[in-house]
Image (tube, rainbow, N blue to C red; front, top):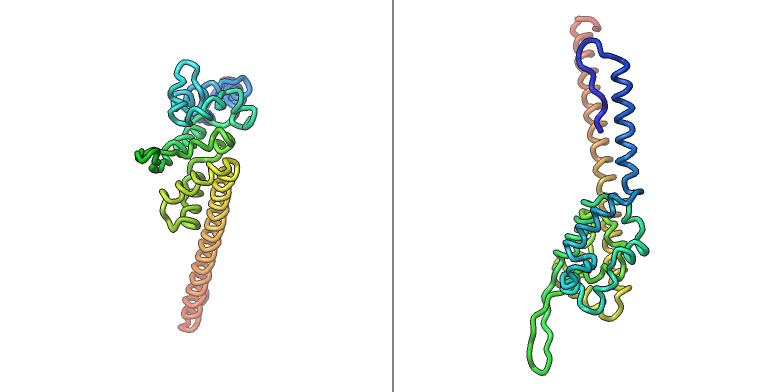
Length: 231
């Protein structure tokens, strides 16, 4: 809630105190809503609709995303037991992260008895292996995957997805660790970039300040030299 705004003129102090107390109560309720499960209920509903969590009333959605071997592990109970921090994170943050995994798709071809079949594989397949991947902010996920792609796949996202997919079938845990390394490295890269940017801005401001002071000193010197006196 926004702070109480006082209009011009006198204000009834009693009403102001009551309004402030009410605002504090509302803010406390908002902060504690995750504790009573309200935040997770909304998140759970959204993840069911997206197919990230198994919805007992619509199992085919999750089966389509994960495949019949792993979809059943992504229930509300199992995801919270392995990533309890999801309970208190904002719904929008989690669904934005889920969007990243669902939208990261690569195509591959399998051949059985001479018949070639085109199939899609999505990064969401990694979520049953490590649900805590949903705790990252979407911007960090996108930047981290871009970082990993530039480092390992010459900037080709599809090649990077193919690499992660191949590793997934060899070792799902290592595949998730590979992605996590990219995400964490991308976060570190952004921190360094921001730090350098702030340092550059501070240096620029310092130089401008020095130049301004030098200009002022020069003008003062000219006034004294020309006999105008010091101001």
